[in-house]
Amino acid sequence: MPIRLYMLQRLSALVMAPLVLVHLAVIIIAVRSGLDAETLLGRTRGSLVWGLVYGTFVVAVSIHAAIGLRTVLDEWAHIRGKALDAAMWAIGLGLLGLGSRAVYAVTVG
Amino acid sequence: MSDGIDNAAATDTLDVRVWRGDERGGDWHAYRVPAAANQTVLDVVTWIQRHREPNLAYRFACRVGVCGSCAMSVNGEPRWTCRTHVQDAARDGVLRIGPLRNLPLVRDLACDMAPFFDRWQEAGGRFVPSSDRHADIAAISPESPARRIADAAIQCINCAVCYAACDVVQWKPDYLGPAALNRAWSLVNDERDAGNKDRLRAVAGDAGCHNCHSQHNCTRYCPNQLDPGASIAGLKRTTMKAALKGQL
Amino acid sequence: MIPPHRRHGLWLAFFLHRLSGIALALFLPAHFLVLALALTDPAALDGFLHWAHQPVVRAAEMGLVFLLSVHLFGGLRLMALEWLPWSPRQKTLAALATAGSMFVALWFLLASAQAA
Figure (cartoon, each protein chain N blue to C red):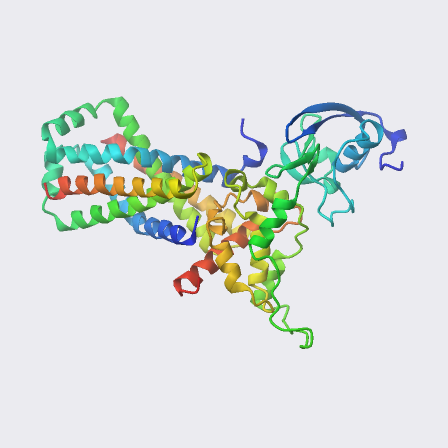
């Protein structure tokens, strides 16, 4: 793994550490209070803060998962060279696309 | 007596399996070897070679843990066989002795060490002098922080035990591996060395220190109690600082 | 069978981190697709959420929450190991402390979720 990818991997991890805690809190609160989709969406829609939190989360997780899976494909599937980097980009951009759509759906609607 | 085993005192025999073959394939062969007090795994291999299999291929030289040539896989774990006692290595009374992992096989218990030493070169393991022979001897305080860090990383005997223990070497064969990176780390902290620019670039590449997953198999098995895992972490920090300063 | 060179805490920590990472990465696209239903097909989202109330699905959900916290704490552990030049003794203590705090945190998490 070249150092640039290592640093991006660790930077995205540091960005996500507090966001994961927030996300875990959201999960617990949502499960405990038994909120339905409509109530939850009512709170997230139109909220700039939730948009920023989950928008950042999606960008960071796309980078993090793409680099992480690149390592797994390298070590366990022995995919190397251009194919490996192509797979990394495909995973990252795919997650970014799906994730942005989800954040848009939940916060803008 | 000449082979280090007091046959007169042997009251029991050991159940020993030795891997025999080459790159094309091979098999485990069973031997009964007279047991003796303070017997090492290398003693056992030598007994088999002298009394049962004259053409058994294995490698050793000093027999006292200095030369680093006798490492083998003993019951699945990489060991320096000359300093490993049978009583510590046997599992359920059986000793399975095979070649080291992660290296091409020459024959039987002897591996081709060339890739292991190639990694040393690729990792910038060569000392690059910053002055010539006419200069005074460099005065480096034994107490200086860099010297202490370098001290902790020297005394490697190139036995390749860490290289055989490392899963990343197994999964990504061009990975520089713990021994070469540990060597690079000792030179990074050598105040007399002038080769850090190229060295840091070498260990920050695709095959470099950032592949390490901190499993620390290397540190666990190093027979000289070195800590290549910590050396690799040191390289990660140093290369990261250099990259942030735009020096890579 | 686990080979002997892998039978120790740091290897196990690596393996948990890798497996949880792969599982989370595989789960993410599905998670995103379901959330996007809020936009494209709210009725389908409601149907899905209704379906997700089944005990089996809720157990799987808790499994994912568990994996997320395992991956979070495992990652923090890894960065501490890499970036703080600690002595082996300090690393052992830190690993024990992390394992302990993770245990307490997860216990709290699971207890809270079950109370729901």
